Image (tube, rainbow, N blue to C red; front, side):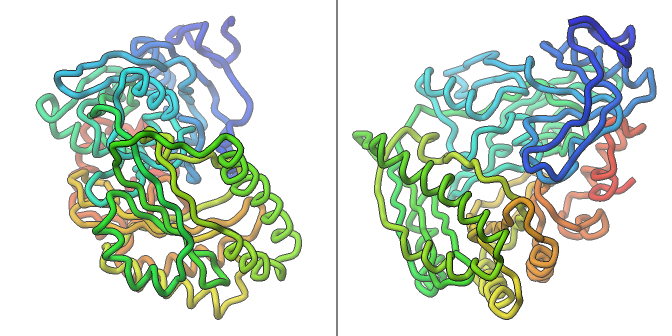
Length: 449
């Protein structure tokens, strides 16, 4: 590919070009960068950053667009990840694997499985790049095992002056502590080293359960299972629970036909149709929800971990998620239910509840406290602001911390009070990026100017 207008002498002609608008997965964020690059190496990426700085352009790296915020949006240089992918190193003695930052979570899992290895925990989709996932705090659910960022053992980072630095608990430890979940504010991640372990099997038990029972037994269900989560269907008293625990096997995955029926036909195709009807005829949503919640059945299966942790998600939506102290989870959920019942909201998506143990990452939503996550969704194209605002008021009253990659209205003043090490993070940002090369309006709102 030849260079086009907008490319400078400081960037590789093969990887630099102008482009039209970039949009995220949900379609609610659009950016029109002046220049786009797709570097294939750390050296190319560092050269592109240095060239943008010389031209006075801000810089942002984007993943696959699964964030609902404008965290990666820029009018300057947009760094895309398509060519910065692949395995860099496997260290079985250290129990680590290093991959390039643009590697997707799917590619990471498939690579690990080919080597007989696995992450301890992960979220429920695999489309994101590893750098995007860790930078926004992607997590699954776990009694003892935490988010993707908490499983990082080292990072390679390009800073605002074009320098390439490595960081770990032993090398640049203050940078490592913060950059594991850095919102793209400290530099551009080019490689991530994860802690891994021998591949294991998980046994999943999915079971409908009444709202009153699951909320009454929540603490027990969390304590008794390595990974517990549940979904409450608004306008109903029905929930679906999922318990994932390690098993010695043998593997017993769902049959191909039953998996297609459950995961594609019901969870995606039928759900898409239901959401479309609900968007067109909001009054039908409660009745549809009641029918859907009663139609769900129990199932049990086992497979390699990543195939159990993750599911296909093809229905597009907008999402807000808050982290609250674990002891506040059920009270907050009951308040959300009360708001839905007394309002005119018509909510076709279930409310998702997950957990995580406390960790030590300064901007982690689980920093310093055992945490529960409550996530609310609305089908794309459906009015969502009033519902999200009402839920957000409940979450902030419980000391909630918004997921960095999902919709929220919090600003730096609120977040400085929610995170004990917020000032430490922003001071490091001042040192690494004093000119705000990696800044944008979203970061100005959540981190301050």
